[in-house]
Image 1 (cartoon, helix red, strand yellow):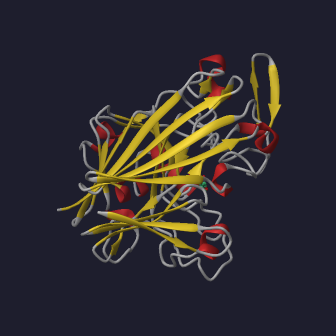
Image 2 (spheres, helix red, strand yellow):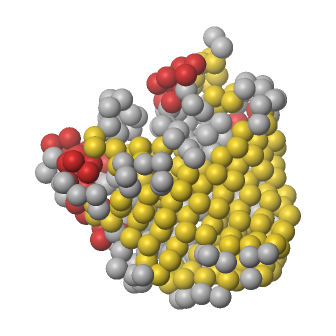
Length: 336
Ligand code: G6D
């Protein structure tokens, strides 16, 4: 296993890791994953051109580290300790993915550590309250590790200078199909698969999620079963959103996504996973936008979006001043 750095223009470096059957590429721009291949199969979207110009202009956040707050925040505001914070409204009147100066657009410093059986890239930056209008600055490390078992692990380590909210995640889109055709045929499973319903503004409506295993009477559910469900609540959500863009509660052991050829195992210590099936691809007017709806799916490990407005002082995303934050998520790919 080895890593090599390829310099691009615009200050973008590509860090390419070769592990025989699989190859994975990261960049300092947004501490993001650029490409992941199993033999010649693209496992993630956004890897058609491994070059700088592609990643700088892309509204889908391909592979980016997203934050400081991963999900939407209603009306771009929240209260903490009696003070109201006003954020960038970059999704209609809401805030999404950390706002206009989210960390997906940040150039991270980095160090590569080649270790026995793995390569580690430690990306560092400071998130400034003067950039994103959340309280406090945050010293952040995003550590990507790739190992001989074709397992990609992301660790987040952070310390905030003031009490704030912090909910980082990675916005990679997967597609395990060899022909990269739509992901409707992929199935998901976990010891628990509960889906939260959304209101008309894309926020969690009811705090009791639907148990999908009992709706579908199986513990292996294909995306197309959900897209075409006749269950009245699920059907209404699919009609409204064109697919899945919902927070899930999964079992402690993580979840599995598979098709005929590959399986992907997700493990995380975050409380929820937002699955987004890339429902509307028309937003990006570019020759690079070759994607149709359902070309990929995300597994965004985070708290329930808008938790600060839903749960107030009990929101899991609250981070106290000078207290270390640590979180870990991994994705392991294997051929069947
Ligand atoms: C996130 O949940 C959101 C989507 O609604 C958004 O369109 C996408 O990021 C870019 O997954």
